[in-house]
Length: 281
Image 1 (cartoon, rainbow, N blue to C red):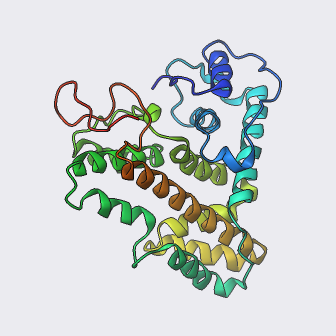
Image 2: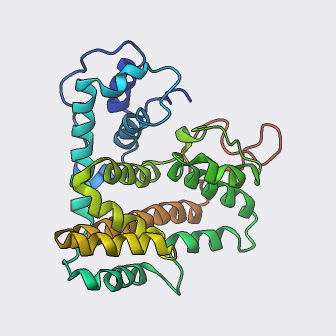
């Protein structure tokens, strides 16, 4: 995977430097206000690229950039903006006794469900209910989820090739909006910082409520470190809020007859040479 096209001043400056040898970066970046940061494609793509350097990296970026001190300082600035955005948009649930964590998690998940379905599940149902664009919508959702699960591509390979999509690593990174990147970035943020271990446990448990291992691990962590129960519930609330925000973005675009993906040529294809499934705005 190569560096994608820049989406604004943050990625333009950052990617220009990353394309060259490791060096000192410019002074701290000017980041968007918390109320718009989760949807800001420029900010989210820049942070996603910083995290990607700890994973597979980019073919056109020197691996020595991974631990370059000024890049880590830049990533810290971006992370602070992301954390401020979460604090702005996600009310922090009250802490509960460790033995009540599992019940509190179930209550948070239930509040986000409509008719027993999560926002994401409702989108999958919407994509398949007899719409002429149903196949295209299904493929769009697969593209969004491919970014969510980019760090474990083996999990998603069959889902990509089944509907005729390209399963190359990161190929659809330029196509997804800021909120999709934010979903992936928050998981990376929680996973890379030990101080956020409680938030990570709650985040995973909320997204996979049917997975006994996540719930068991979260309950064990709460019992071992009772002071983390508030963080556990906050991480869950962050996951659920982001899922809802992402689903609202997708659905609002569809209701206007538009693709939920960013405009790019070529976009997701429907198997016909040169014809894109996803409509562009």
